[in-house]
Length: 140
Image 1 (cartoon, helix red, strand yellow):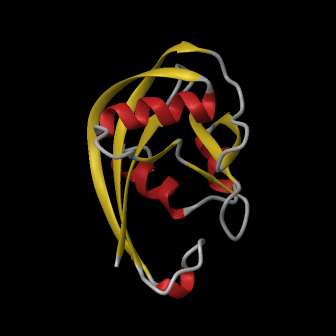
Image 2: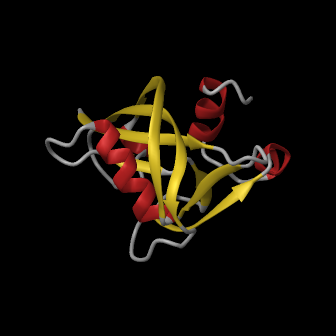
């Protein structure tokens, strides 16, 4: 079984909007939490800061750990074809913008980022992690 550990952040602004990134690597284009996989030897807090900067252009201050979500994806459902299932551990933090400006990632697994109201999020094509993370944050 393969394993992937990733760190994500729930980032909100003063108007209560939620920052999401548009994931283009899956079977369908869908909105997700900004964040991604840890590099070898990288601390989760460093990974989430790096990933947020790459995907959104923002520097963030990492806050409380909201939770860890564990999921096993059968080999037949993996985005990247494999004969092995994938065990994903997704570490979710609260974070706040501390600098930078919104910009889109190029040549990555996401192609844009945007702020959404909670009502707008509910209408989006989104991955399950969005609802999981927003529940962890007490937003949903």
